[in-house]
Structure formats: structure tokens, C-alpha cells
Length: 235
Length: 315
Image (cartoon, rainbow over the protein chains, first blue to last red):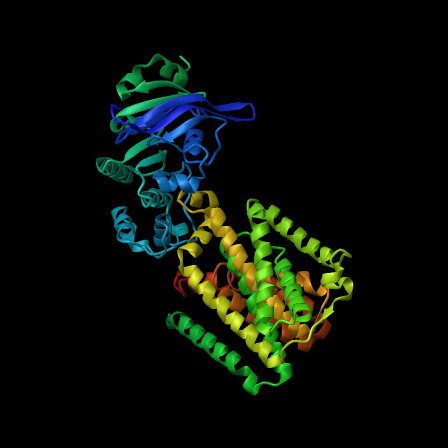
């Protein structure tokens, strides 16, 4: 599965907030071209892990490698330029910027390119390109934030609950988009609470609990794992 | 709704007419009227310079007068002690402010919101006190102040007019560029911008330096207009306050907002002062309260939101 060199390697990362060990020595790797699900109960450290990968939070200890290169401690904009993009659990777009401005920003230029129009078209927002992003519905903002990240031309894409709050039609469209991009060779690491989405779309699943990796494997293996059942249901 | 479509054309015509009249004013205006127009253009410069950084970045600079005052002192010292010509003296004011902005920008622009505002306020007050102390007296003449004679009214008028035009054009160019777009993104959501490959620190510091350069140059011109500077006049918090109010009235983070704000409020304040004398501050305050209730984001932003002006960054 990870025969080639992994695109992302996480080695024994640790991060505490006061007395809370959000990440307590967690490690795994993601292979080039995979779609990996990252699941775990609330507070298990999933979003914290995302924040450390993209440089928002400094690590207390441990290393993160992207394509074999140590990216630990780099500022977020440099990590983004290397090709790691992420979306947020709570959508964060730029409200008083037009849709077109929102999607051109990550390209490092103020001139909209074909890809910007193409992606707006793809998610059905092309007609609104000159309106402020604040005027969009919640679901539309979520789609906007995803195509924004794609404008970075990222090869590793971290999605934080992409399906939450999006209607079933949009959700289907979103998953199609993920698979389409995956076929281009882009790698996904996806935090998701919707188990159907995880089980049907991820090739491999990593389970976190209390800041540690407790299981890893195919969706079916993970579903039957004792430790996972205990973490989720306390059984 | 035909009037809606007429607004941009009427507005553009008005602005061009104003620019042409202001550009030729020394040919037909007497010294008193020219001085009033000088002051209006001075505030166009200040509000424009303030807006260049704070309007776009959302980092509200409450110590803006620091750069105005430093520019005043630097250029007056240039004129008096170094016998500089008019233009080199003015540019010295701008450069000194820009250098100071670059030095304080790196540490200060890491702190946000109220903390940034308070730090800048404290720095501006501190600079005023420092200028008056005995340590700097040989250079600044302390509380005694410095008289300055440089240029005639027409020259100073053209200097401030050209600076105002430069600031407006620079803001327009800036707003259209990636640099301006990324500073707006910093205002909207700084950490999200950094995750989308924006080098937020570099962008903030650069805009801060440019803003300080404009403020310092305007300060230098104003100093020669006043003929005399002393610490309280040079670091008068009024300059900060009026710049903020004018930029906010016109529309934060827009190109024309600062011009509209400075021209309108200066006209209102002159009119009120002329006709109501001592009551002017109260009336002026009431007008401001009404404006803030009806147009909290300023004229230009409101017009963009209403769809009367296009939502482009260069207006």
C-alpha cells in the first residue's frame, strides 16, 4: 500500500495544551495517491494534528516529513507553497472579498486564471463570481473553501469534515471531485464523522484516541478492531 | 432605477472635476481660500496614508501621528540644519518615518486588535515626550520648537496636491495587485490567508512602511505650511483621529474612500465652524453619529454592497 516513499510521515508528534495532551506520541504515514480517513472520538486530536501539519501550531516534540523533507516548524505559508492544502471544520472564507478574489488569492497572483473559472464552474458558483463570499449559503461557502485550497495546486490535501452540513446532492458531487482529483495523483487525508463517507471512500483508515493512534487498516479491519470499539463505545 | 446607474458616472465626473479644479487652484484662488484647500488635501493625504495600511489590513493604527510628527521633525531639521531643498526635505521626512516603521513593524505587527492599537498609541505619545527631552534637545530644540521658512504657498500647495494624487494612484495600483489582495485577506482572516500561501508578515510590514512614508512626507509639507513645529503640535493626536474618522467615513480599504471622507468632512467642518462658531464640535459630532448609524462601513463600501458601485478593489 505504501510501497513508494510516503508523501507524509508523522513521527511521534506531541502537543499539550496546559495539562491536556492533545497529541501524545502519535505517528503514521500516508502514501502517495492514497485517500486516508482519519477518525476518532471528539477530542482525540484529529484537528490538532492537522494544525501541526500545516504549521499553525508548533509541536512540542516529534517530526513531520513531506516527501521526505522535514517541514516541522516551517511557517504556514511556506508549507502551503510546498503543496499541502487544508480546509477547516468551520468554514473560513474571506467574507468581504468576491468569489473570484477568494479563489485567485492562493495562486500568488491577482489575475484570475482559467483554473479559477473552471473550478467555480465545477461547483456551480461561476454566476456569482463577482459577489462577496459573505452572501453565499453555508454549503456554498464550504464548496468555495475547498476549491480555494485546490488553487494551491496541492498534492496533499487535508479535509476537516468536508461532508458536514452539506446536502446529499452536494455531498455526492464533493466525493466525485475528491475521486477525480485522486485520479490525478493527489493524496487525501480526511477527517470525517460520517462513517458511510469514510467506509465507502477511504482505502485506509487511521484511528486516533486520546492523542494516540490506536488502529490503522482497511475500513473493514478498523470496524472490527477491539480498541476502536472501546474508544467509541467504551464497551 | 436609472439613478442607480447614474451614480458612478456622476461620482467619477465630480472627482475628475475636483482634481482638475484643485490642480489649477493657485491660478484663480487667493491665499486664504488656497490655504483652506491645502488643508483639505493634507487630510486627503493623511486619511489616504492611514487607509493604505489600516483600511486594508484591519490593524487599526491609533499611533499614526507618530509617522506624521517624525516626518515633520525630520524634514524641518533637513531644511534648517542641512539647508535641504524643498523636495529632498519632504522626502527625508517620508524616509525617516518609513525606516522607523520598518524597525517597529516586525515586532509590533505580531500583535493584533486592541493590543496593536494601544502599543501604537503609546509609541506616538512616547515619541512626543522623547522629542522634548534634553537628550534630543540639540537636534529638536525640545519644547521651544523649531521655526521653518521654506517654499512659498503655491509650491507647498502643489507639493501636497501631487502627494495626494500619488497616494490615490498608489492605492489604486496597490488594491489591484496581489499585494493589496493579500492584505485584504489578512484583514478578513489572517491565519486562513497564511494557510493559503500568503506571507502575512511581509505583506503587513511592507504596507505599514509605505503608509508611514506617505504620512511622513505629508507631515513635512504641513510643517512648512505651519512655519513652526513643537512636540505638541507635531504629535497632535487630532491628526490620528481625523485620519481614522475620514477614512472610515469614506470607506475602509477602498481607494476613493479616503478622498471622499477627507473632502466631505473637511467641508462640513469648515461650514459648521464658520456658521456655528463654538457649537461646531457638537454639531460635527452629531453629524458623525448619524453617519455611523446609517453607513457604518463608509460611503464607498455601502455603495458597493448596494450594488450601485461594482465590487472591484480599485474603487
